[in-house]
Length: 243
Image (tube, rainbow, N blue to C red; front, side, top):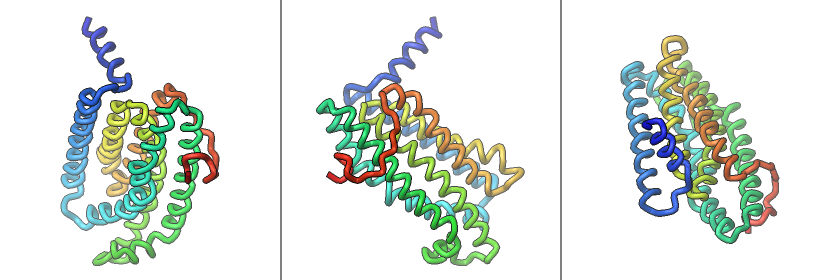
């Protein structure tokens, strides 16, 4: 009996949320879960690495990757992609919507990959230009650059997961994207707990990679269920991309 109730309850969560109250409740619960895991992550960082220069170096190394992600991907998805994609769906233009999504994903990942490659090669230069290395020695700057190189790759994976979340939210699926975001923090926590004793401050950076993989993998079944199949089209002429 409890197993049957759990199964039915879980299946309800996997269905699209067709009213504001159910959507708002699921979003609220998953945000709270993600925030709790975020707090645990911060407590672990402080308890293991303390208020040290090493922790400061790690935190500084996340800024450029986060800045690139927010600049290129996050704003575009929130302000443009979801409304346009949802409009296509409301007009039953599913094939056109998926074609536009594939094109935008291919273009977004390609642009971010090029910028990531530039940052990967010239990480010390950009860290200096953006004044992130102020007060650190050359050795500490090299450490910051290496951490940045790992984290930028994690952000590249995170882009794919973010597109998946946007797709699912356009179909009124909010539970899986919310859980996926929470699992991203769980990946970082796992990295810190399992690797901090061997690789030190690199553990949260590797955790970013693990969290980004969690973020993608947990959404894949639902993305497949809605019928989306990624067909890379590197063209700005696809309807909905530029016009």
